[in-house]
Image 1: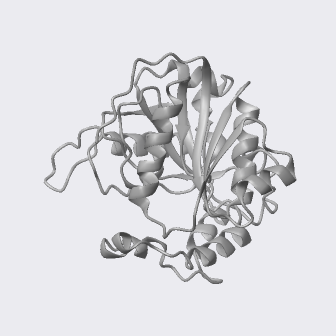
Image 2 (image 1 turned 60 degrees about the horizontal axis):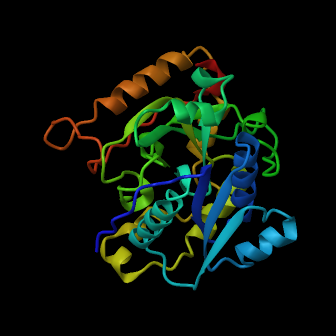
Image 3 (image 1 turned 60 degrees about the vertical axis):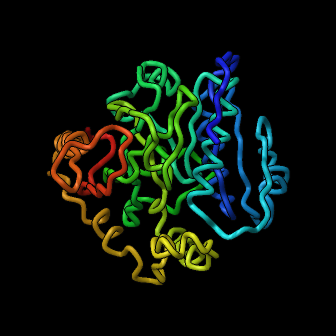
Length: 303
């Protein structure tokens, strides 16, 4: 059934929404980031049977202010269910908020260097589209220059090596509630625009040891029958171990500082905006695609 929402009458600016299972470190960083970047944010967390529960974690850490938690039982993971749940929560929140940021807990909307000096709220307000995709920016730990990541401190104080990735240029900022998320929140059903001043920081590789440990635990996920039938369970099938993603971390350590980060960024955006489907036709905004463009590693502050 299609939900028909009434006219919006928002009274607060931003609500940040996510769905998690056993991700206390990311939840801590997610809350810290948005509380530092917005004056009065609210949060909705769908807790997929975390142990300990998200509510217990928030209470023990004193992090529960303005956080609403919806508890789910230990059902098998299903990406389509997750997208439907996040769509529904976003639609509800947009009845009272100017905009929502709906993403995984290891994804943070940040200002790009081109937006430096302006607040996150001002940058989002300046975007005219109803649905906005920040540029996907993967932060990668350079273990020769950067310390172990502290999830209780801001990201940009600790990490400065990135690559741009099309798969994480996701339409996570909504100013209207008529759309629905596709699987993985990589697209929405209505047209969206890429931002030139906002990035979506992805923390999968933010710390070598932590990332390896997390990848191993993801291999234990119980998938729904539907996900297995669609072979989506293979996305998390990497075994992990000492050699997992070693090439990625090595690239950050051996970065070619002569590369122009600005040029790499411009080239990436041009490719992103010139997306073509399997027949070589331009992809329409909101249309499904299998684009997997990623850039070389560059310094974040250099573009």
